[in-house]
Amino acid sequence: MSDNIWDRPWITTYLDNSRESRRPNPGAFAYRYVDYHGTDFYTDETGEPQAGNRYVEIKLETFTVISYTPKGFWIKAPTGKKFINHSWGKKHAHLNLAEARHAFKIRKGRQQSILKEQLDRISQVMEAIEDDKWSGRCPKPAFKLVRKLA
Image 1 (spheres, rainbow, N blue to C red):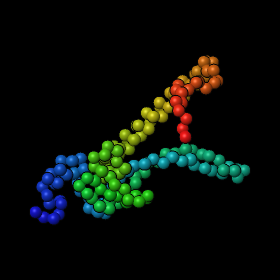
Image 2 (cartoon, rainbow, N blue to C red):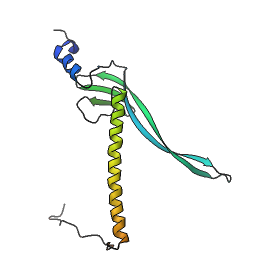
Image 3 (cartoon, rainbow, N blue to C red):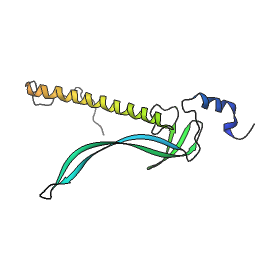
Image 4 (cartoon, rainbow, N blue to C red):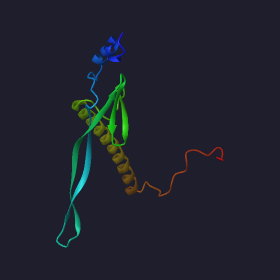
């Protein structure tokens, strides 16, 4: 049998049946979509800077694939090398644009649901304050400290 791991039939069968079926050569790219938020600033007639329109920019980050292993691949990230495992549900980068776009959509949907839940809690607190159902005091703790920490 050859010393090359990719010549083994069970490896190539596994790779062909997996979601990440293509094995990139070192130097290939992995992709991740990110969003950036900003505000346009302008100078008014008095020379003072003023905030203008807010904007959102969706950018595609590309990472160079350094090496590939049977379990995943290494990319060159701004913070150093980063390993991406094929079996991870959440990956930092993907080997094709379609999967990167799908992961971005899932991340933003999760962020939206978290923020909606936080907004609902804040709305409930504001209603309690306005309806004078709020005593203005902190509630007693639900537990007692059993022993003192040294």
